[in-house]
Length: 88
Image (cartoon, rainbow, N blue to C red; front, side):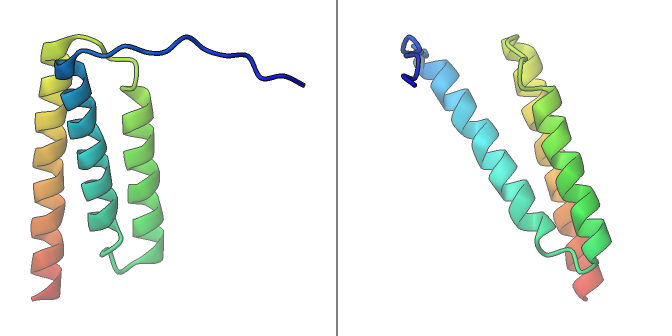
């Protein structure tokens, strides 16, 4: 069976940088979730993060994407604060 070739995807520099921001945010969220002590809470948060990113994957409006990244960073900071408090 021969795999069909897809045409190359051309991104503007702005789109590329935005994509990198989203990937970095996703990785940072997953890294923070790994520090959650409870297995069930960790699984819940991982599934939640995955679903949120999948749900918003098709967003193309620049302002909307920027707002979602800002919101995601705020949620990450909140999770990091909560984890820091739990450790102290």
